[in-house]
Length: 67
Image (cartoon, rainbow, N blue to C red; front, side, top):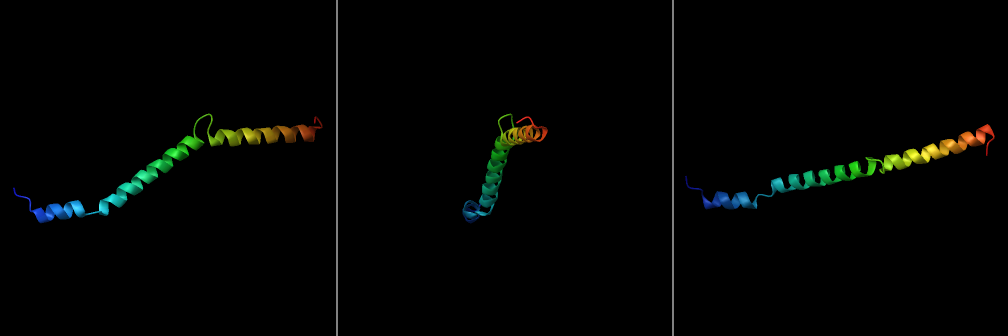
């Protein structure tokens, strides 16, 4: 089976699939950053939870008269 050089050159010049791969890599990076920031014991969600718990404790102390 002989491959025509014209088709081979067109195949290597075709850039349509490159954009799809770039978007997939970009999406994977974004997902990785989101998992790293929101997941785990030291993630953003844990920091937000600790902050609200601290606020709740202070409000409870103020409303009960134990400031």
